[in-house]
Image 1 (cartoon, rainbow, N blue to C red):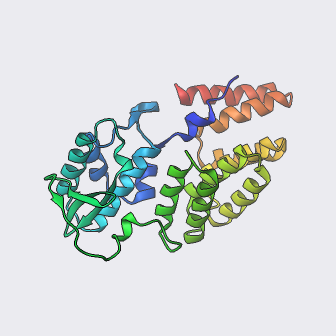
Image 2 (image 1 turned 45 degrees about the horizontal axis):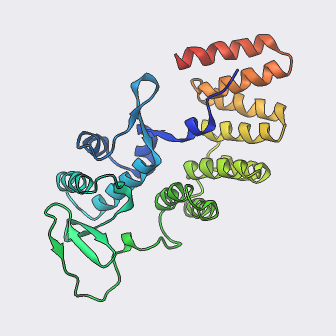
Image 3 (image 1 turned 90 degrees about the vertical axis):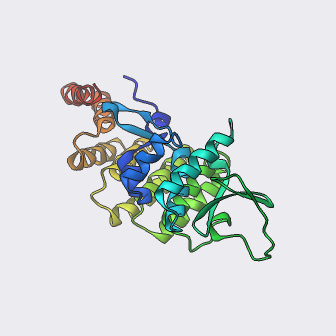
Length: 272
């Protein structure tokens, strides 16, 4: 039995999770999809799945909405910017709002996103906050998105960003989930177990935290404890297919074929 890869499980997020992370209303997210600004894939049961790059872009949309840029103007501006970038990722540009207009910044240059008009900045004041590096008091959502981006190039910085997210909001489960996975991939599962234990004190009914705890315990060969963690996850979320799969594997390894078969059947039912 081969489980779905860790990369496949962690590479995308559901629409519900993205909305919970960023606080974006569904009509803005679907509008971005319809405008072609974000292009999520379809997962099991034809549900939208968003990449980390999509999350970064949606975070930008969230910031612009906070700056009171109207939704229709926001969608037009992002679509126009993306259309003018060719193969470059939209998440790689710096966008900000000035007088409720979306402005693109590239070093010393800046231009209005909708019209393409070059803007001259005669002021010596610092750039707006959303183009500055995050400070320690940034919201947990921003630190989480920063960690997601940094994972591709700087694991130390990514870990620091996730820890800042948890300092800002100890109940921010996605930061705990990503950080625990990052720690285990570095062979630091003891740290991951401690982190998840702390996260579960704040969110004891989060099935995904129990699931990740099971993975970390299993990596430490604490299989009985891992089984308990997976079962706790399923008690909270019975359709968590990967928990059924991992339980099937652990019960098979422990010489309990009937339990293994039951969980394997449930895994196959949920996945198909």
